[in-house]
Length: 316
Image 1 (spheres, rainbow, N blue to C red):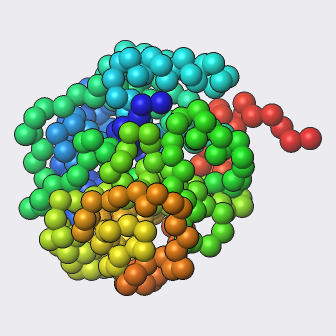
Image 2: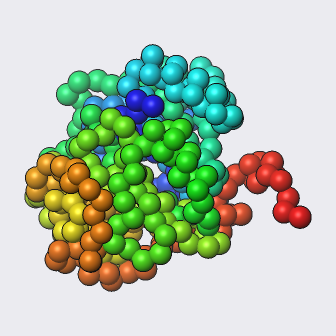
C-alpha cells in the first residue's frame, strides 16, 4: 500500500479544557475551528492541514482512531481492494464523516489487536496558514506524516505482524533496545524516519504509550522543555539522544496520560542496510524519571469500544 504516514490522530478525553490550554501554550499547536456538527470537540493544527489532532469528549482518556494517508485516489482504491481481497472488514466513511476529517474519502478498519484505523486521501489544507499558539518554529510533517505512535498490546502475535507487513505494506524496522516483545514499523513511502508505529507487549494492558512529533529546530525542543519544567509537568525521560536515530528528544506526559516525545533531527535518517541491535536505548541522557506506561494504558475492556467487544467471540 502506498501510504505516506499518519495523517491525523483522534482521541477521547474528559480533559478538553486542559488540552485547550496545554495544546497552544505548551506544545505550540494552533486551535482549529471545530465543525458545526462537532462543536464540543477540540481540533489542533500543527501545519497547513485543516487539522492533525482531534480530541472528542469521552469518559476516559483513550486513542480513538489513527488516520493513515494514502498517496492519492488511485492508491486509495488499490488499498481498499487489497483489504477486501484479504478478508479485512472495512466500512466506508459517509459524507458527514469525511467532512469531519476534512478528506475526500476514507475507510475504517481494525488491526488484529482491536485498534481503530482509518485510511484516507486528500486532506484539506491552506498554504502558509499555520499560526502556532505560542512563538514556535513549527512542526515537520508533510511528506513524512504527522509523527509516530507507540501502542501497547495485550497480545503480540504473528497475525499482527502479518497484518502490518503483508497487508498494509509496512517495513519492519526492528525491535529496538527496550525490554520485552516490541516491534517498530514504517510505511512503504516513509524514507524519512525510522518508524511510524510501534507495538509493545504488556499482558492485560492496552492503550497509547507515546506520540512522537518532530519540530523544526533545536530551540523548539529546548523552549518546550523549559515550559514543561516551569509548569512542573511530569517527565517520562529527560533530554537525550537515541542510539538508533540521529535525533535529540525528551518525553513528558500530556493531560491525557500518554507521553509526547518532542524531537529534533540532528541529521537526516538513513537506513543502515541491516537490522540494528543496540546495546542501550540512548547514547546520552534520556534518564527514565517517570513510569513507562502512563494512565492512558488500561485494560482492553476499558480502552476498546463496547460495541467492538460485544462483537468478539466469547472465549470458551
